[in-house]
Length: 175
Image 1 (spheres, rainbow, N blue to C red):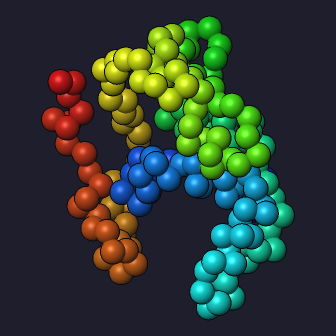
Image 2 (cartoon, one colour):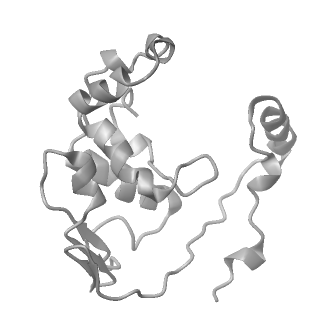
């Protein structure tokens, strides 16, 4: 992420097998937005790990706008979800409002408001309601002939099995 100049070319997601819990978002965002914080975290790593990373030399810090792109607008655009990731006409009205804080991890861990479909769900840390969620999915075209090569790559390079990734149509059905 820190080597990418155009935030529209990457998407930050924790909602897949290689990602962390969504609870890691504030930690990851703080590392992207604050070079000093990143340096402090690096100091806590074992010397061997610090020697093998170039993170200490990267001065890039993401702006709030860029965080909105990589966490919301960009993923929505990549997936073709035209009602998500923006506040324009026809958008679903999903908004999170944060109280500015120099501690970016704290800021993103404790949103001031969470609004879903125009309804306030969280107000200053208090859950007001829990609207039902939706499942969004896309069916992108892809080269099926590439599957054996991808499976081989998983077998050689990954601790996660390729078979963990496909999602059955029945798993997408609404409750």
